[in-house]
Amino acid sequence: MKDHEFTEISIKMIAEKADITRRGFYNHFLDKYDLVSTIFEHDLFPTVISLTNINDWDQGALFIVNYLQDNRDYYKKLLSLEGQNCLQTEFYKLTEMQIGILIPEILVGRKISDEDQAFLSDYYFHAYMGLTTEWVKGKYGFSTQEFVKRWKALLNNSMHNYLGNYAR
Image (cartoon, rainbow, N blue to C red; front, side):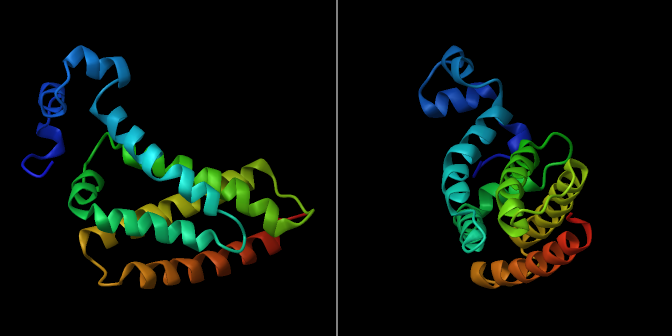
């Protein structure tokens, strides 16, 4: 993606660069979007999920933004895509998994409805996706640590307030 926009990249180009056949590519991936999803899931999910707990969840967020920072040019192009954007789907899956881990730890025996859990996942996904996209594009000059510190403050305050109002 250094020389081409993602929309211009064909399976033939990927296969040639990877020194595999098109058939070999399709034996592993549905399309180039599936390839991006697989890379994201492989590179991020295991570490982030292992770091997701009430005490260290921000370390998972730091891992994500450090990863995005290290691959900024690549993800800047992907996050800027209009229309089909497999990265948003992957971020949503990751957000759902993290919320599913964090909420029970915070509630300690209390419960929230499935609708409230879905509502929180949607809220944090859209907030995180929007802020992260703008950060990757360069809108905010925060370092990775400064970005996560701000995200942590937003998340801690809003989640505890929400759960305080809607948990039973």
